[in-house]
Length: 123
Image 1 (cartoon, helix red, strand yellow):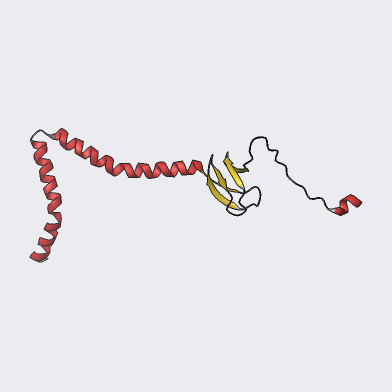
Image 2 (image 1 turned 90 degrees about the vertical axis):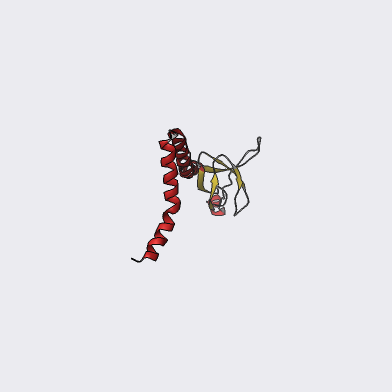
């Protein structure tokens, strides 16, 4: 190991050594409360993004719904308790209780058509 390599390694550690020296000086002067509060703030700043990430994943787990359109059976994803439009057929849908339902204004009667073949009528 040469002297030049040792100097490069020492120059990389200089900011950390300076921070350690300042922390030690403040703690020895009786300003430990200041050091503790700064460490708590830094800890919270490091911990907050992790908590936000896992909180957002949990929220998505409970609110993201994957289901089929009741009209055309196209499968896609939507947010729970929202109104959306099927990307395949354009039908207005409402996401309730983890399933897609056709959105009908109040007073509208929704019926399902059944195809009857002509042979069954003749028999």
